[in-house]
Structures are given as structure tokens and as C-alpha cells.
Image (cartoon, rainbow, N blue to C red; front, top):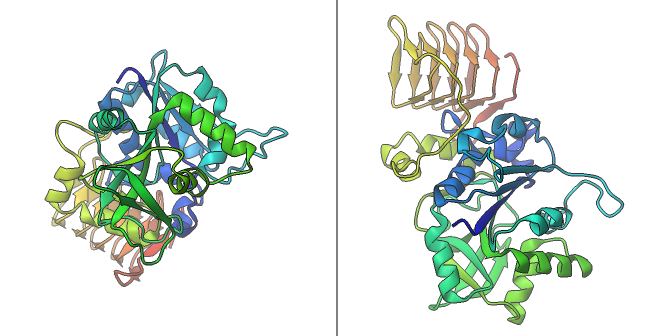
Length: 374
């Protein structure tokens, strides 16, 4: 795996996530009580042995850079470790990427200067915990030009995205068809948008596509080459847990699913822990007659009221008499005395004042933006 590099694209369309991504990229979105979405991609690469990782950013990446820092938490702070690739303005590039293909074109220098033979290219809005070693081995043995990781059934994938991709995979693993944005796909093989190929081949394909005015990696590069057969593109089935965070509902459902111990064991296996930025806090405190049932409560929380079926991030305070049900409360938020919330998502540092009530149906959770007082 020393001959493999990683590249993460964090410029995905986040329109369906509303207030949750108004001040941050999807990659920096807090999930599971103490993590960010990008923690899972970085941890998967580190456990695979990948030491050269580039992160392509586009907008709202201040929070992402603050979280990643030098990459020390992922042991990527060495001589050839983590490289942040922010957008830049040139005569040919207006600083806004139309898609992954545009982003790769603007960062061809990073590909040229890297020395690894293979590259793992991935998005940053899909949560999974995968060891790429088996996928790379299958890629080499099959003689494929590009290998696409996919999961069967589309479990947890494709709730809102217009670019949801489904693959038709032959018995020998070759991809014979690709459907993008289909309301009724003919296949149950949902692409994870993780690609394995040779670094130099990717560089050549990007340059050729850009010269022909192409912008979309899936539609313009992969789909065309599948249809005309000019490249051998194979699939590799990932059988673990995967969830695409592309809407308020998918974000809410994913966090709620983690209340199931079986789901947590799939996402956090002992042999592949997920690393994240360290925040030194005291353990969670439960004061007086507080009650907490079937919930994830991070360190630094102070619970005096009632918490049921909820996910609480670091430093959350639930005052005496307050009731929190079926909700996601992000870092340092406060629920004051007598307040009640049900099916809500509270962003960082938000406050629900004394005796306030916010109750929503499970299908349409209420979202409170960062630093808002209700």
C-alpha cells in the first residue's frame, strides 16, 4: 500500500442539507456524537496504509481546515502526509468547480508531483469504514483500468441526490452499464463513488476530458467509456455499512440508526477505529434526578433533565426539567429549564430558552442553525 495515494473531493452539492451546510462543507458535518464525515474517509485510508492524501476543497472549508489541522490525529503530519488543495483563481479556472472532473483538472500538479502508482479517489459525503486493500488487490488481478466500489440494494444511499449512480455489473465484475439520476434504476448496485485507478492514467484521462470540454466525472468520463468500451471498468462490491449524507432526512436517519448497537459495531469495528480531532473534556455528568435512555452522550455533557433516543455531542447542557426526545444536539448547545424538543436537529452553540417547545414529525425534523437562540 506504500504505492497508493488518496484523494478526497469535498466540493459536493449540499443544497438539500440547508442550514447544516450554510457555514461548513459536507465533509465537516458533525455526526455520531463526536466525529465529522471526513473522519471516516481519512481513517479508512490510514488503516489501509495510505500515507499521501490530498483533500480538494471548494467552499465553506474554514471549518474543515480547523478540524483537520496538520493531520496529526490521523498520523498524516509527516513529510509526505496530508495536503489541503484549496480552490484558486486563474485565467482558465474561475475558482468554482462544476464537478469532480473540473476539480481534478485544477489540481493536476498534485497528481504530477505525487510518486505513487495507484490512486484511491473518493467523495466526502458517504460514511463508511472500509479497508481498500482487498479492492486494490481485485483491481490489479482483474486488469481493470478503473474499479468502482458499489453496494447492493442502495441501502442508505440515494435519498435526494440527482447524481445517484447505479451500475450494471456482469458476472466477471465488468461494468456494462451506468445510470445516473434514474428514478427507477434497472440495477440494485449503487455506486459509492470510490474509484481505484493508476495515477498516471487518471491524469491523462482528466487532461483529455478537459480538452474536449467535459466537466462531469460520471457522465462524461465513466459513462462514455463504458458505452464505447474504450476502457475496462470493473466493479467491486462493498458489503459493509454505507450511508450517503445528502439530505436533512438522511442525516437524521443515519444518526438515529447509530442508537442500535449492531449498527455501531458495523461502523466502528475494533480493528479499524475511526480517528477524529481530540477535545479534552470531563466525562458526561448526570446530576440529581436526571434520566437518560437509549442515547449517545459525548464527553463534556451535563444532564439534569430527561434525554430519550437522542444523540448529544460534546459539551451539551440539558437543564433541570428539560426533555429531549428523538433529537440530535450538536456541540455546546443548551436546552434550558422546562424546554421540550422532539425530532429536532440543533447545530453548534444553539440555545432553546426556558419553557420553549419544538416538536416535529419524524419525517420532517426541525433544524436550528448554528448560534441561534429560540
